[in-house]
Length: 69
Image 1 (cartoon, rainbow, N blue to C red):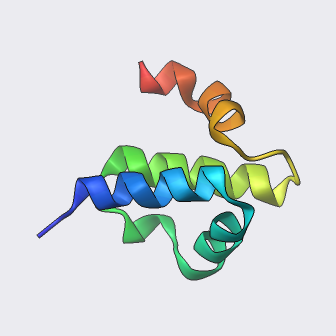
Image 2 (cartoon, rainbow, N blue to C red; image 1 turned 60 degrees about the vertical axis):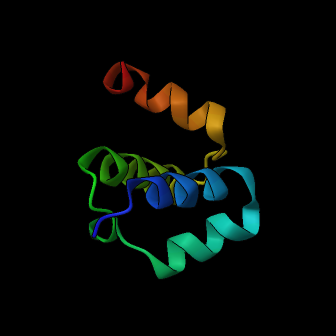
């Protein structure tokens, strides 16, 4: 069974807490998310982190807002 709500909580935790962000990026990959949009968001978070950009709910939203609508 796929738990979309749990996927949302994981992404929310990553965006609100630096330790969760680091743990999530080390332990997860986009394929671990069943929802295609969650896979996309995780990929954006990964790319931003690799570029040493600030990663939080606002900065990620700015990156995905054209897709999120």
